[in-house]
Amino acid sequence: VFNFSAGPAMLPLPVLEKVQEELLDYKGSGMSVMEMSHRSGLFTDIITSAEDTLREIMNIPDNYKVLFVQGGASQQFAAVPLNIMKNKKADFVNTGSWSKKAMKEAKKYIEVNEIASSEDKNFTYIPEIDASKLDPQADYVHITTNNTIEGTVFKEIPDTGNVPLVADMSSNILSEEIDVSKFGIIYAGAQKNIGPAGLTIVIIREDLIGRAADICPTMLDYKTHSESGSLYNTPPTFGVYIAKLVFDWIKEQGGVKAVQQQNEKKAALLYDYITMSDFYHSPIQEDSRSLMNVPFTIPNRDLDAKFIEEAKKNGLETLKGHRSVGGMRASIYNAMPLEGVEKLVQFMKQFKEENK
Ligand code: PLP
Image (tube, rainbow, N blue to C red):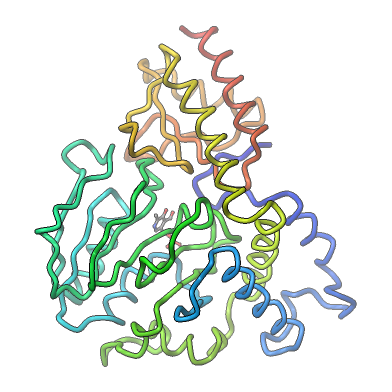
């Protein structure tokens, strides 16, 4: 089936086949990666290779550390302020549910200033940031680069000057080329474009490590993971192994640039059809549309359940929109083949003919 879930999401088929092939006996060890010590030579090779390949495909500068941690992106909502609070205030751009959650959590530790928001139009666009609203004394500026629920993406990364830019990149990391040097911290839960849930990636500029507040738990302190090569305690070993295979797969596709081209093609196919059809509707402003999450509606909301049910019968899974938005949402992450989107569009045409 083609799975349009917002996460956990589809993994590339060759990756799953490789996992299956190596499941019981990893490289002649007679053990599964799941059963191996995280301090063994074989696992050291896996985590080192995962980091090296990620650095290569994202072009991560040498003055950044890559951390493999747990707790999901949600844990980072607290970890970020606890690690880099100095003046105890930060600027946030509010682009939807996940930004709000990040703000709510940060508020427990620091002053949160909302410097831009698209809430006036139900988060259907990415707001402009008025440079005069940026506080030069803020500890950081926080954005959610891709809004999984609402279906919007920052097409341009804001310039925050000397104030570090922190980005929740959970739903678009590795989907398009980005310039890592524009960010102080990038974090992402793995379960969309990287691997299974349980692994979280943090990419952090070195000068932001080692300034954690006294009350910061050891496990949330970036220094703990940076000094130990993400092996302070037991990392999510199987997740790191699958992430390594996904990074290898991206490299084999021709890197992030090639994956981005494929993503643009997939999204264009879907948006173009939605735009030209007089049946489906995209609530998202054209210049803010996500390549990863495509919400759409049918004017007659009574048809939503029928659409979702019939799509499922056609092997098109998990197209229900988030409960806060309604309608449908097709999440088309890196692992979704073009064929899956073609099949969805074909189904949408057929459904329209039968129900218009
Ligand atoms: N941020 C964004 C943009 C997300 O899409 C999600 C999850 O779907 C989260 C944060 C929360 O991630 P986690 O479940 O890993 O805590």
